Length: 317
Image 1: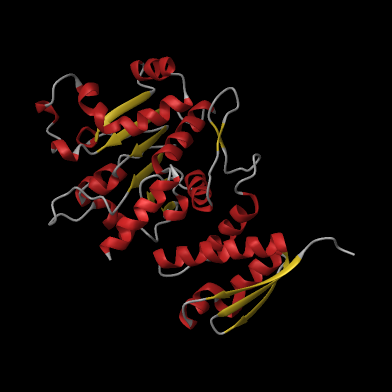
Image 2 (image 1 turned 60 degrees about the vertical axis):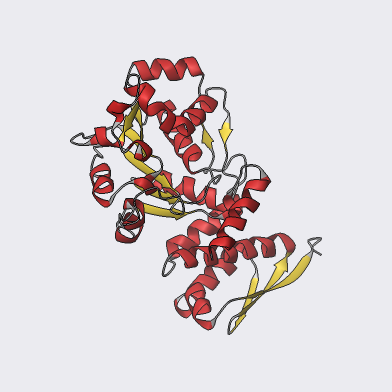
């Protein structure tokens, strides 16, 4: 006799249309969830009943929650989306998970702290270009730097290039005091903070002197091709369409590009369309390019940040 607790849960979907998209053609996604998690699923209209041991039912609930959030961001979900979310729900937070990033010789882990973050890490591993969109505090930049340092440590790449549009200065950096690093440094502070958490500051300085770590304003990227590198564009929402195209086409052999941004914090003139917003729409069907949306549930800063973001979003509606 099993000593596992069994439980029943019911999920109310918003419409029959949502149900059809979530269940997949001939309920193929329901069967994937049932077979992977070992739960009994009964779907009637826009209701789904889950039966099984407590742990499996909780994982099934998380799976449906993640799939519903994904469906809100994109027109449909694919079998690969379902497989990825199922894998993350099963293994995403375990210490030995493939979603973790070992970034120090001492074996320190940078671990995804939400299902969305685990999807993001997996997307960066499996794709050449990853666009990550989400609010403040969701770990967009931190995890991108973690991926870059992890690959550098393993010898998979030879350099890390950190790029940010200096939109507040109109990229007229000549008007700012100091050399290039001093000028661009304030704009790259979040990336430096992440680097200094993962590496000794002295090593960061040495790598910068030897061009293993390079910092560059977006305007300085034109005409270059970067091979054997992870190239991170932070604050991507503040690029124009032509700047984003220019940046994405800098990628050379054996390189990864990661673009992060918060499309609710665009500092461009109102008449200028954000290059990140455009890219998310324009590139959504390109192979080996992933688009990851993070949300409130992925905010990992002080718990108050999550409530502040939510309050501002409600005010904007």
